[in-house]
Image (cartoon, rainbow, N blue to C red; front, side, top):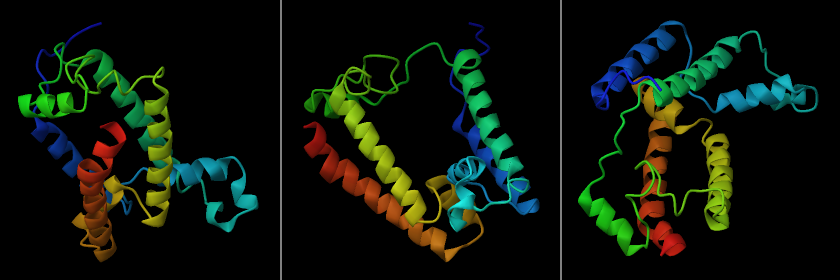
Length: 185
């Protein structure tokens, strides 16, 4: 593995990159958001012949496929060639809090506790499947994902996005402080 950097990038690099992407997409008349790609995949599979919701002009959506491909390729390059060699620094308070739930936050690479997030832990896999279903339902119900509403919708001053983002935060707080302790503790 080739290592170009020894420290994580500053958070402002991502902030500037997001600002440039949102500006360019606004200028081009596009909305930032990833959840629509599933609709496009279903349209490519022929679902538009049976359901009007999936009847999408795929020529107009080619840019989104390229966008998602760029995210995948960029993520691969960042993980394999631009990653910091050390584990992620986690607050000692967070490590102590997770230890109360019998989760060792120092194991693995520091991103996800291996004891909870691995393929051999059936409980973790079940939680991931249920969580994925709920995220998919939520993005369809809110007519967009967190990135689309929080990044583009709020920058375009859309009330629908403000309501959705408030709902995302309330849901996140309820999950973190009420439901997660019951599931893990």
